[in-house]
Image 1 (cartoon, rainbow, N blue to C red):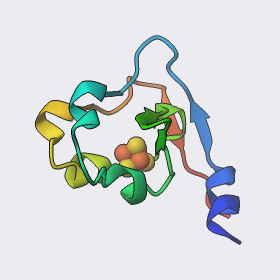
Image 2: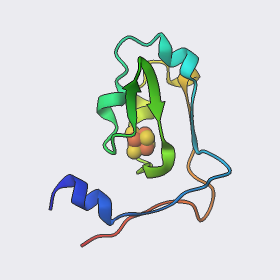
Image 3: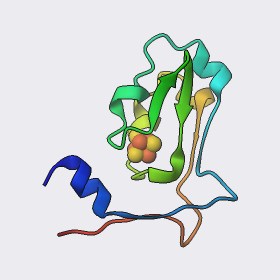
Amino acid sequence: LSIEQLLGMNKFVVDDEEAHIKVNREVCASCPDKPCTWACPAGLYSVKDGALSFDYAGCLECGTCRVACPNAGSAIDWNYPRGGFGVHFRYG
Ligand code: SF4
């Protein structure tokens, strides 16, 4: 199976009321390398029209963006989803 097929097996219960990851786009705007755009295994970060775009809905809760971000303390507010929400992994 491809990575896309494996990711497609997961189920996500999206918390529409509270994002578990909040991105400060003002801080991100001055980040030259934006490592989140290539480090996130789910590909949730991208640059569109020169601005950082992020959607927490498909988050795998791996924490990679939190570690990779050079401005993590001010750019990414990272928490696990509230109980009952988030990714539900399915294996095979
Ligand atoms: Fe992507 Fe992992 Fe960060 Fe979720 S925690 S946004 S999957 S890098």
